[in-house]
Length: 329
Image (tube, one colour):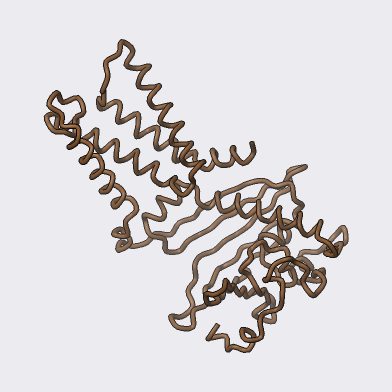
């Protein structure tokens, strides 16, 4: 039930936008059947289509972006029928050619899909976007911290299977290097610059992607805030993208993409924490009751070695990767 609520909550903007488009379409006069209660019929139609849209978004999440495309396409089709009452765009036209109307409707869908999701808008100046999302978890602040914030010495608590190495990139321990590797592809490297930290409650990281060929690029800033709320903890994530295409901005806002990522991340952190607590022979080191902010990030209470996790990322890096110069990884 909680997962269903999360799905509906993350689709709140999509469903609201769809309801608005349907209401506008019906207002323009898409009346295909006679009834003595047109208002009741129209409201019932909107509610039915909203249920269908919500069902598609939940049951087939890969197709959820088609919901807003269909809603906009329907509004455009009805609008054209209102402007051109004698054409096949108007379903109330007594001389309507059904086959032609279907083809026109499909054509409008293709055009709207290209307009909303096409890369043509990427040529315009990208915008700076700040996005905030929040969720809650029953895990302790310490478990959430090590599951969300990559910390050297706590690789087992990171739920990403493709993260094979976490270490410090400078003596001051203000830059963290992440090495990702997903066979058979090439590895990738990220540098996380710690701008501000108050462990285990808040951290702000600047993300730098390492690319020896094209040069390093900054991908924005991400911050996590963990707040104690009694039996549960509230997790807030804020991401600032320095240069985001307009289409991705609109699509991300409508989809609540960052919130979906946070839900999935917390779910994986909870599963990883539970697996560590119940793994055979994998006894977690007990931390003292009070830990200073520096201790959280200096990895004083690192897990035992070798890593006890079940999958390949817990093993040391293969010798052929360790021997490669960093520019070739």
